[in-house]
Image 1 (tube, one colour):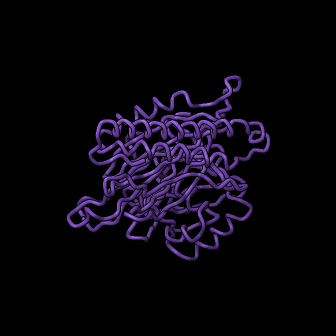
Image 2 (cartoon, one colour; image 1 turned 180 degrees about the vertical axis):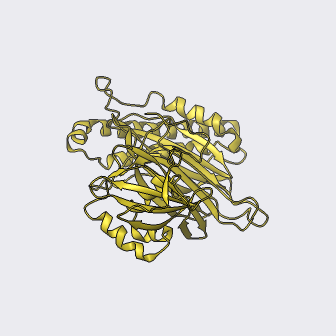
Image 3 (tube, helix red, strand yellow; image 1 turned 60 degrees about the vertical axis):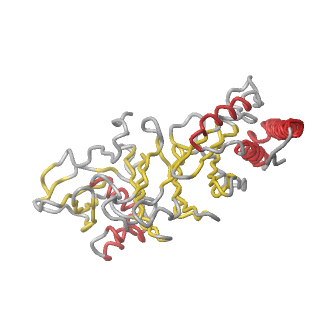
Length: 397
């Protein structure tokens, strides 16, 4: 019901009661959906699959929140509304206290945040052993909040469903004169947080959002390790000295190394977005050894851009046969100041000649089955752990 205009007191009272009744009905429907979802706990756990009833609960929660947004005129007051929403949802969850890992039927905290002219709402519905989060973006249009962007995991086909937990949802508005009305970009960083393991899939996605639709520009996932407080960190911005510069997306997380003795390495994903065009650029690694790891594990279509010659494709294909693996030996600095040699063994040593240009631009110069005679200086600092984000803690195991 829409209550607007000048109403006499009796009519206003009726309108308030009717609105409250509609809110109660929405909450009752959401509670019923959570009960239904919880009743399928055994089926979901034994068959290791999710059911469409989860989407029903997600959307009923979303729709109820949207009905509450009608009372929000000023996005600066979003946190006040957030507190009221969470208070109303406080006793709605349905869980089995006897099984702490059965979160089916529970609700997490709802978050409201105003970013760069958009209102971002994040919600969480509990599943087996973890939670599944959704996010929605709203623009103020003709006095109402219009949903212009969303991200959910609603495909429950085998091999398709991975629940998401957000590390960050960030809205970035292009800067500079003449760009204030350009569509914003929305970046989400997340993981499929679950029980037991510190290894989980991470997601990093970027959309361009205009007044009528959103377009997914980056949609990638990798397997990452919980090194410190989060699985993944990132930023989105622009070269402030150049108003026509493309959007700059930088992602970092810790992933497994091809050398089991090394355990893991810092992965870097750096993209430039210009319109609909997305290209990966340097840095792709932060040390010579990590660059060799990245060069070997990526498809040649990517590694070719980091290679001095197309002739290296033969080595790249040969070393990928049967899966990439091995043990890294000592990294050697060569007589030529910008060259390093990385040794990968142990069964049949392969030597990689890497050019390192500051700060972190690497090029594969050559690959051979024998060391280069001018690369004899052991460099123990070349492969030390590095990060591009000062918010990260030092490596610990």
